[in-house]
Image 1 (cartoon, rainbow, N blue to C red):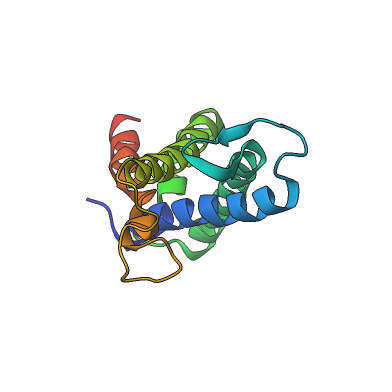
Image 2 (image 1 turned 90 degrees about the vertical axis):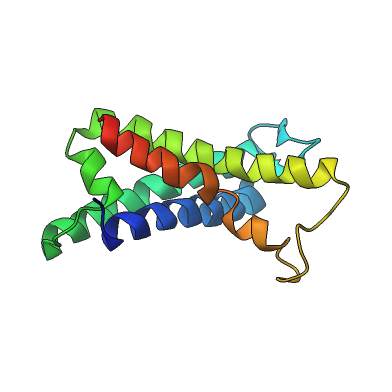
Length: 151
């Protein structure tokens, strides 16, 4: 069983990947790598954004592990469980999870494009719809459970 700390840490992983990718992509997108990530699916996404998202996830993970250690919470976060196996396990796992959050976003964009829609719903105007709020979580949550079960 996993607790609130675990669930929140996975949610924050996805949000951190998204937020850091957005800001790195806006600031540096196309400066280092001229090729877009997936121009036909999501023209605004850049490789710099993906790399920035990965860096952001690593920073969040390091801070979270330290907070877990200092507070001695009863349930472990996703990050603490990974780092308990060693940084050589945690680093590729976190990079994988960051990449999978991008894949979730791209798959949802592909579905919308193939349906000829800009937004998945009108419930959250200006945000692309409800699916845009959870698209990266769809692969991330089961993969996080799989990783901590297998490792």
